[in-house]
Amino acid sequence: MDRKQHVKRAFAVAVGIIAALAFAHDSLAAERVRVRGTVESLDGETLKLKTRDDKRVTVVLKTDWSVRGRFKVSAADIKPGDFVGIASEPTSSGVNGALEVVVFPVAMKGTGEGDRPWSGKPNSSMTNATVANAVKSVDGPTLTLTYRGGEKKISIPQGTPVVTLGPATKDDIKTGASVLISGENDGDGAISSKLVEVDKGGIAPPM
Image (cartoon, rainbow, N blue to C red; front, side, top):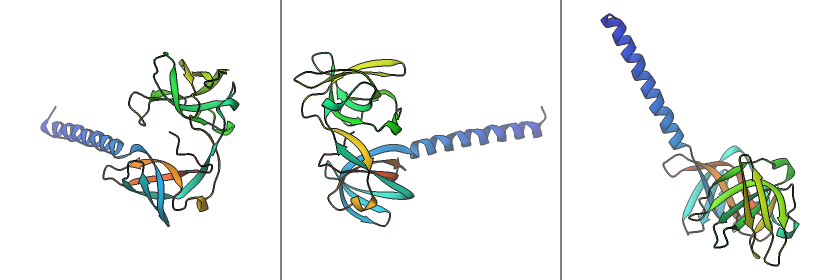
């Protein structure tokens, strides 16, 4: 290999490394975040929130942003075949106890299917799965959930927030409204999102 070819090869390797680093940086820059809080103001596409820990957060809403509502339902109405998302934590009984539950509409079945760590509380997990069995008891139902590659039992104690999702409008995003934002953090503290989930039934944001 002559000097000219060697230089070309070295340059190509360098370009590849730079591209890989840039991709890695972009991946880190696009970190997914979830923000729970109450609306302080909405000005055009700039949404200002007060989080559960009293921090102020500004969310830049994308041009095509949309809204969906959060409605309270009963744990007793959950039945086999329903697709649910449950945040839960280990208990002394060996069966995880639910912290919050979302019963997904039929059109959202399969959303985020699986079992993974949850950011809402230490040692907790999030399970999006289909209800295979629901055993009723005076303390609340115990669900057997199935998802690709696994199965998990979770009990739902009385008083656990249980909601479903449905229609809402941008007019519902008003001062004092309880919302959940799932968006992207660019690493400089700026958050962008295209979806706002808002309380429509007097219940704090699930998940």
